[in-house]
Image (cartoon, rainbow, N blue to C red; front, top):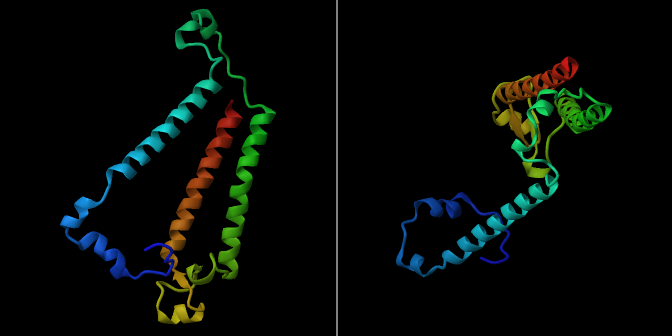
Length: 169
């Protein structure tokens, strides 16, 4: 239905799963869109492969290095450029972490409009009273907060491992 952006109910999407195939389905051309998708994906992969080869054109083949040169290889250590790239890469994640925990601390919502959610750190699972208190927004309970703690602990551990590895070089 072209141009109809109205929200559709569960019944609309349920038919995609529950309806039986019909004779009318055979008249639909599924080969053309499938070939277009496969061709586009193949062209994208070929372009990425070409870009990879172009970026690595000056790298010698694996057997081209003599054994003596390969045996004398020493790591260069962590340079100032490496540290700068690491810190620049960490900045957006640090900002997002700060903003995430700040919103939880003050009870601010995540998202906009009907899609906004809020963490209720004092309660358990969301009930009708919590939805009413938070202005109709969806409420995430202690389980979602526990998952957030776990994910941030994993991210912090990854950063800690990167720093330890950099200090050992």
